[in-house]
Amino acid sequence: MTIDTIARIPNNVDLADNRALRRALEHWQPRFLEWWREMGPTRFQNAEIYLRTAIGVDAAGWARYGMVRMPEYRWGIFLADPEPDRRIGFGDLYGEPVWRQVPGEHRASLRRLIVTQGDTEPASVEQQRLLGMTAPSLYDLRNLFQINVEEGRHLWAMAYLLHAYFGRDGREEAEALLERHAGDPERPRILGTFNEPIEEWLSFLFFTCFTDRDGKFQLKALAESGFDPLSRTCRFMLAEEAHHMFVGATGIARVIKRTLEVMAEINGDDPARVREAGAIDLPTIQRFLNFWFSSSLDLFGAEISSNAAGYFAAGLKGRPDERRYDDHVAAAAVLTLEAPDGRGGVAPRQVPLRNAINEVARRAYMRECDNAVRRWNRQIAEAGHDFRLALPSPRFRRAIGLWAGIPTDPQGRPIPEEAWRARRDEWLPSAADRDFVKALMRPVTAPGKMAGWIAPPEHGINGLPVDYEYVRL
Ligand code: BYC
Ligand code: FE
Ligand code: FE
Image (cartoon, rainbow, N blue to C red; front, side, top):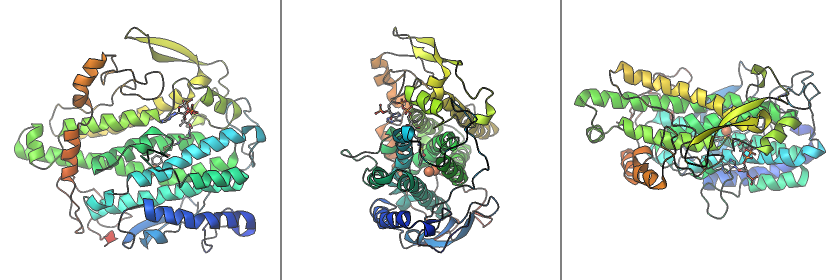
């Protein structure tokens, strides 16, 4: 498909030939820019930033790098090229041709999935809007803004589908995506994690490691969809997503590296002394990890979900990496879940696999998160310390699903409410932890210099040195 990068809205969906759609999107565009100015990054709107911009879908050259002011970023609409003769890969319609239009009977479900996905993208920009003021380096400041503009593009991706395939109610939903706001008591974002404040960079790094990774798994599940435009949209979004998780996983590794350096300097691991020396002690890092991982697990939905079963049966939303499974119909398969036994314990429960699709996705996600934790632990082991970070149990601090509201310790053992209250601050960031981390956040704006709580990255961006002036203030 030809790429139109000159148009007001760069695209590879032939907007030039679809006058009604082009006009609808050109009407939405100023609303988006107004939202960006009001709810997007505070300050820095006139700074020149070394950003990559999507300009096509060729694996070899889909992005261009250069100095850009954020409001002038070219948010465009890009779908991965269609696969010839693509077939539905799972569910009751396994093997049938994919749809180029929305089937009438699935209109409400598809709209709901696209709206839920679309809602998270601007939400994350809103959550991160103040972080630019306290960036630990120009390299990190640039990465923050790179992620923000791309989440803005992901919003465009979903707004395009709503406008192009859902008529009037699609246009209304696209407007509403700009009207709900993260943490707004009246009109909050749809999913819990996207209403949590992100006021310091430790949370930002865990968010991009764990929450953007949920994004990856959800996009992979939607990339399997029988609704081909949704599949192609999500496939291209995944190209951008990899960098977001890279920022999180390597960012936490840099925080840990700095903490280990300080532990070597003070020749000890006393958290109070690590803090005095200006780094973040490992137990505090564990508490922030517990918070963001447990919150992100909720984003997969309930363990037992008739919604998910319906999406799977109908070919709307599959499992991430559906190809890796043998049985794509999954009509008779079962999965064993761990459910509360009602007497303060854990009991196995067998569920038809289709009803447990959310859990299948969550387990694949947890394995990937575990790999990230293993890499961080290797650093700690190599520095000669016994401390190990760990993912909390998927039963810990859940707000959605079988374990919602049931107090457990991080190992997932159910405990009485009083015990939970008494030990909460051992397991999750306390008000004092948050104050400490916030107090560390001071902007560092000289090229190549880093704040004292984080080590420099191993490499710069796109082959440039770490001390390149990634943002011209
Ligand atoms: N918070 O039957 P269930 C990303 C609701 S992140 C609040 O299990 P289902 C990104 C649910 O809506 C990826 N409510 O639901 C990352 C339902 O409500 P109703 C985002 C929740 O449908 C970083 C009820 O509970 N993409 O891209 O099976 C930066 C029953 O639940 C939550 C998607 O989410 C929650 N966490 O599964 C930027 C993909 N979880 O109808 C971007 C699209 C559930 O009873 N969405 N509920 O009022 C979906 O696939 C599904 O809607 C969900 C939920 C997986 C979210
Ligand atoms: Fe995104
Ligand atoms: Fe992302």
